[in-house]
Image (cartoon, rainbow, N blue to C red; front, side):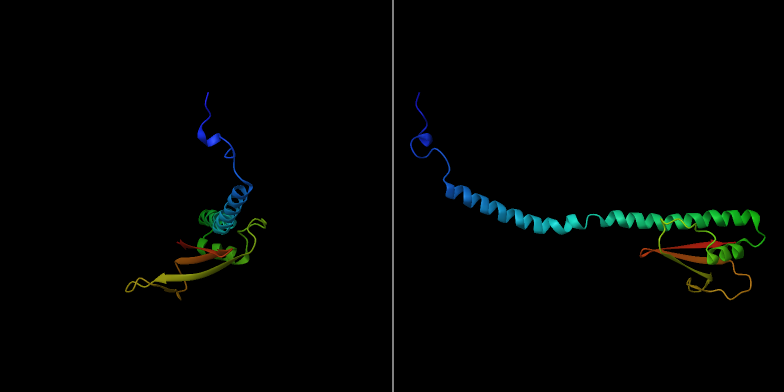
Length: 145
């Protein structure tokens, strides 16, 4: 049986120079790929943290909704009592999951001509605006009579 011409004599494999050049080219391409993909891999955790922070803010608002519904059943002035509870911090438990958060409240009304909100100076306001900020995420909720 005859051997193919490629396997006859000294052409039986790669030279050390060919192997070294191939390894150098492969390492350069690998370094370029790591530089390109490295920042994306390092920042891939950010969407997870954003979702966790959004869930934290939503849970605070849900606790407020629950408390307001309870105030509607038990209190003759539910909106005022609810605002007092929010300001005094009686709604949010001392659960360490929430971390640092801030709450801003204001009585508002909507201008019929422009549709914009403005501060409600009346003695019996009807809309309470609450903004909860937690880890650079803010949620605003309106509570009405």
